[in-house]
Image (tube, rainbow, N blue to C red; front, side):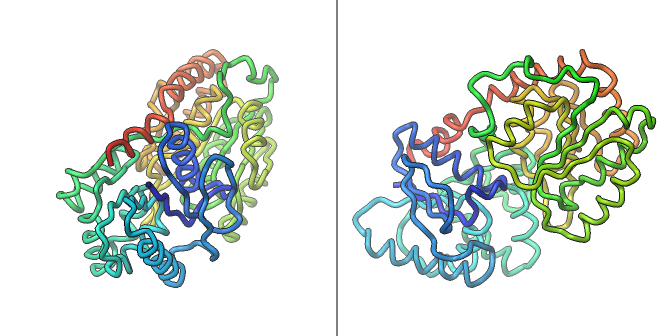
Length: 369
């Protein structure tokens, strides 16, 4: 049996949480025997076996210790059963980096690298060594992008043997069976949506700075919506100051349900998320880019981390270098000023997003383990 261990799970809408739920749904659809270990308050799906972790999930030492103790008890109780532990997000991975040596049982490990782990878990020489020991124990290491694969091999060349690079897909809750461009607005107002927590790493300020370079009349035709939680007050205040200079309309939607987000995508014309690299974090892939593409939205993004695995430059979106506000502004203007160009890029996106599915990811990762 495969046990997906995670400290992040919906209703939280982070990328790792979406990944864990979608992998579990896909595995169940393909008649695979899986369970999800997730914090209390997590979404319940009737067809997924859930094991409650009665603590607040985090990368802290207490959370790590509790997960290891629960795992030890589980293994002792299920000695006769074949066990595969899928360390599916950074919290569970860090627990096994710190205390995995306490579990001596001959069990199989699958580990997923989302991206930022390669920065956070290798800064401290001792933790880097412990991370290496954990990687040696893995039967498979799942990476979602070429960027993650190359970075991991650069740090730990031996890992190449165990790596499976399989991209993710749009979250099932925010797409319908068949997306078309018929639902795109015909209003003279251009709707731009950005989905991600309000945080420096997500680069919302880059979007506003680029739009401020457009003529005032163009700005007035724009409606910009930010979707996602605000968990960095200082950065949020800086965004609010920039917004005051913008001639268009700006709304902050906060956290949204999948259904609400699907409606926002359907009413929008352009998707923008201009993520930036930081010393502690990187955009390892970006499921939201595929979600937006599935709704026929042309993408505005930066060439950072694994974004280029989710967005094809000049085909499903327009990419620029991080902090290159001039090019970013020109890319916005290209899409804002040319409706036919938006439609062509958007149609390419629908086909691109449709080529990704979680069933394929689950089969490739879990089969014959």
